[in-house]
Image: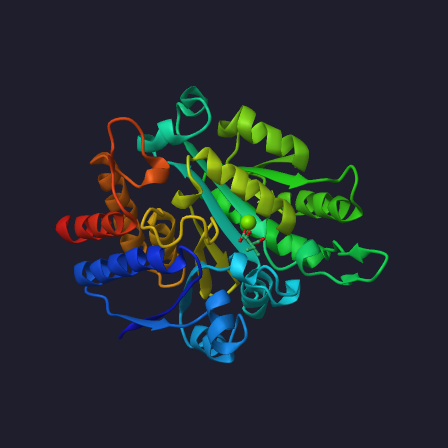
Length: 358
Ligand code: IPM
Ligand code: MG
């Protein structure tokens, strides 16, 4: 039986890094004798140019008939002058999250020991390694709640959460923490925002069901500072939609490059959408210098969470570690004594390691 994955490369570096992920999926297929059926579809700016809309119906139905979506990235200067609601980010990614009720954003910030020198922080801050998981609420809060609007005198968005929305994401954070170091830091702004008072109360209530997990509440401004001062204090970080957006970029950069980190967007079914944390990086697109590892690790997460193939996930992570051990780096993570390779070479090396390490 073949496993169906929708492939949505999108804009900017999306298609280049997706090529690496597809190469790696082919290697997984050979190594584990799994047949993948990959269904490519247009999304984002490319879809606007070709079909007049960032999320064509055909793309949505391709996703619906797949077990999971591997997403590249969308957006770029070419589409920035469109009205905001037609721009690729707003008109493709957010509707996809909403349509499939992908309320869980899992964003791991994992420092590979080989890349400690690539981090802008002092290596001694993560002598014991760094493994943070951000659990971001993805379908509520100020991104989605109404009303939103603009007239001659003002523009406004509304931040709102229901207790049910907070509870379901909080449960994911606590359940995940049970499999890890059993620490949850819940990020809010309960000193200012009423929504965040509800957030804090609800998270505290859910915590009572998880007596083995320690819960710490932290204001978002303090959390942004603590992530840089002492990142190793964190295990699972639970955030609402907008704070999670900001904190996840910050955490990603601790690891040295936005090009290293994957993400999973999940619902309460096995269906999920997987994408690199970084964006379409139009400034470096088409030059063969982008780092495909985030896209490749996103494919690994897809295999684990949506296709229930944890051994394929682990094999991809191992292959990435081995290639880093061999000293190969794309430009964003290069340092003295390493060998700089192109986007394509990096994908080939990881794929090669997968088939070779049987
Ligand atoms: C992310 C991105 C998106 C977000 C944009 C592209 C809509 O920044 O996935 O973090 O804000 O959620
Ligand atoms: Mg973001």
